[in-house]
Length: 417
Image 1 (cartoon, rainbow, N blue to C red):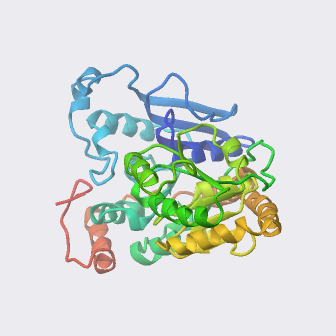
Image 2: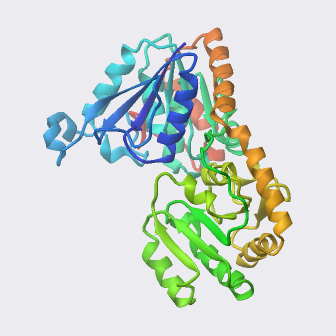
Image 3: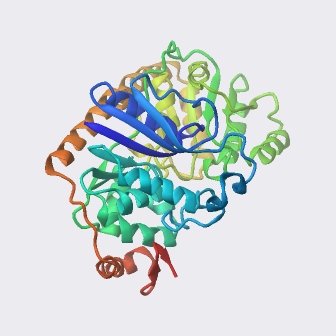
């Protein structure tokens, strides 16, 4: 098969970029695979797409300081890429045209979109013939009301949609009810880190991710203050960058934890840092999947995670390879951490189980699941739906109450008026 991915920026750092390359590399072992990046912002990609994956771009923004530098067309608003997608300010009439030209002439058996705005392009502009598959790397619940309505209007033109959790797939089936669109849950893949697994003997708890409100590092720091009160010999490292750093720094100082909690900044690769720890902590209020959970487990760390929607409960087996605790409960986080800190045998046993269990997320396994899905879709052939505006709007009205609780909207050019 010839498989073509459409990616926002394959030269950037991001979870979607990394998991796309993991999957593309795996599929390229048996198929012709390309990744088409809408934007190119660096000379070389941060993550290696793999020797068998062809990487090309549509818009080169290296050294570009203004939209005008790319021509008048780039100063005009996009009309295909939906305004409700968070990346909309980066798109334009130029990207509409270039993506449209690419999809109109694409020579592929399968074309795969990697975010809602690009899935919209694939649904509306791919020529007849290729199978059209959209990927959801976040969750339906995190999308705005306006974006949900846009997706409901265009996603019926897809052949399939994949989510990274069963919970999100259930949301798509229940709320969008996309007629004829196959909806499958396939988790992200995480390769073998290639480091010596943690032995569970260090006295470090490790966390990693964007320093953003949803990650609730404030909760983790407060919980760790209770850990330190009982076990002052243990310490916490938090890796990542983001808007919350100043507030977290102030909280560490306020609680007198400057010798126990360390904001380490971003680091790549992260795997050697996981392996230096003995326990991983994830205290998010929301996860679309939980890549850091799997990354830590693949390095041999048991994980204490909040049981937030979608991700952790589909990864962690409580009492076997980690612990799940209620969201927002710092006492529960502290108690779960101390349970592992104070029981060396339990911590070592859970670390070994985490290492073994996480192998199910290896790219070879996830790639095989995708290959089976794609072969089935190609065997059946693309439906090539080009429904009328009226029929699409009728379908959107049918699920209005479930999505928004509001009355009918007027759609104009893929947007709500």
